[in-house]
Length: 179
Ligand code: GDP
Ligand code: MG
Figure 1 (cartoon, protein in one colour):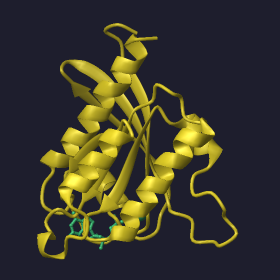
Figure 2 (figure 1 turned 30 degrees about the vertical axis):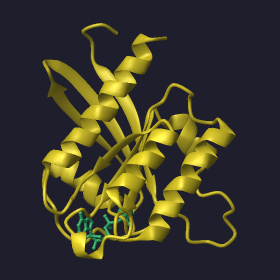
Figure 3 (figure 1 turned 60 degrees about the vertical axis):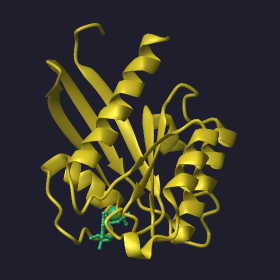
Figure 4 (figure 1 turned 180 degrees about the vertical axis):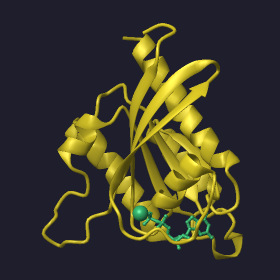
C-alpha cells in the first residue's frame, strides 16, 4: 500500500462522560458543542495528510450501563479496530480505573491485534482545579502498559485532539510496515 490510500479503524473506549464524543466531534468538525447525547456511532473521515489520502473510521462507543454486561468491550469492537484510544477524565478517578481495567481486558483477551497501538488520553485538562489524577500517574501507567499518552482538553483546543489522531495513525502505519 505504498503511496496509496491509508485506511484505518479507530475505536474510542473509556467510561461515560469523559469526553469520547467531544474528542470525536472536535476531530471531525474542529468544534466543541458542549452536549453530545448518548449516541453510539461509527464516523468516516477522509483527509489528506502529508500528501497522502487517509480514510478513517472512528467508532465512538458507549460504556455499557447494564449490570448484565460483564465485559465492557465486545469482541466485535476489538476485532474491528486497528488502533484504540482509551479516554479518561483527569478529574474523575473512577474513569482512570476504567481505563486501567480496559487495558488489562484488551491485553488478556487478545482479540485486538497484538500490533495495534493503544493510546491513553487524559481529557478535561482545562479543569485543573478539579484534577484527581496527576499527569505523572497517567504517564507512568501508560508507559508500564506500553501505550501512548496525551493529556488534552477537547473543550479548549483542536490541536491536542489532532495530535492524538495523527499519532495513532502513525503508529498504525508503522505496525503495518513491520508486517
Ligand atoms: P462521553 O460520554 O465520553 O462521550 O462524553 P461527552 O463527549 O458526551 O462529554 C461529557 C461531558 O463532558 C459533556 O458535558 C462535555 O461538554 C464535557 N467535556 C468533554 N470534554 C471536555 C473537556 O475537555 N473539558 C471540559 N471542561 N468538559 C468537557
Ligand atoms: Mg458519547
